[in-house]
Image 1: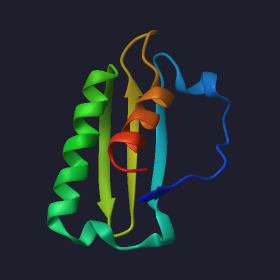
Image 2 (image 1 turned 180 degrees about the vertical axis):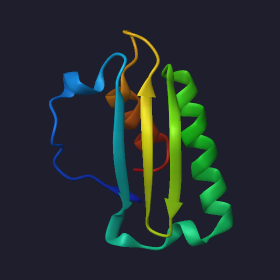
Image 3 (image 1 turned 60 degrees about the vertical axis):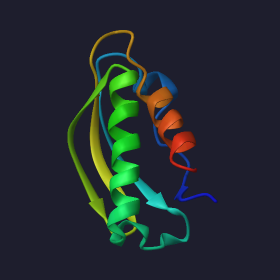
Image 4 (image 1 turned 30 degrees about the horizontal axis):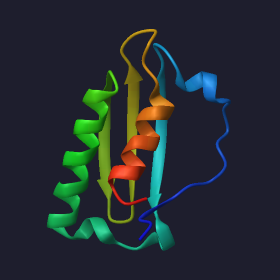
Length: 95
């Protein structure tokens, strides 16, 4: 079951690599209010934070809304890959 829908990205992939800060909004498929469920919210949050750490990125801020997430993700060094981090998060969270 896909929870997060993806729309066409505005920036080329190279803008997601290296020491960058990027603002992202990730919507749940069909705009379902899945994050109103505390269990689902905490499970997705855990996956999200673990993925960020593994991919050498940090979160400046994140906010879960009932049907989407807003966040600012930052690449820690020239080897950071925010795009790869987002892809991994989507795979692990059931995208």
